[in-house]
Image 1 (cartoon, rainbow, N blue to C red):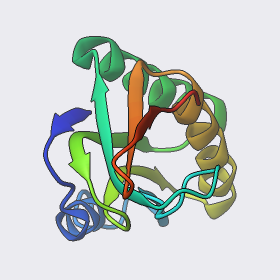
Image 2: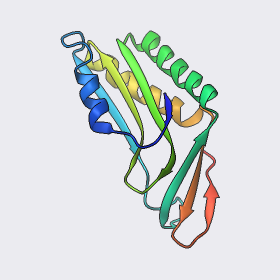
Image 3: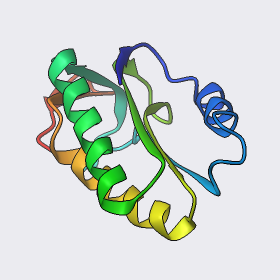
Length: 137
């Protein structure tokens, strides 16, 4: 799910825990936050995120569908938000629900690796010195 605004991680975590009590033996979370320094060592002031929403949503749903079928997890959701984010702020959360921890622990790296490469999501670092750079991840 690709939405404008800030991620309310506490709400997403609580909603995930209360989703279907007793059905899942594990709920596993990945929260990606904005780094304060670029790969080039420049101080990051903000990160700007944009995407083609429909294509991004479709790809995030596909990644979760594939993970559920490949690792036999109960469910998977990826929430990615767009707009401006300061260092330390969360910009993505992936949640895996599973009966067994080994399924969830296997599915999470798969979901993260695909999420980092496949959706049509663009990131622009805005630096303290006033310059900026679109990232190629």
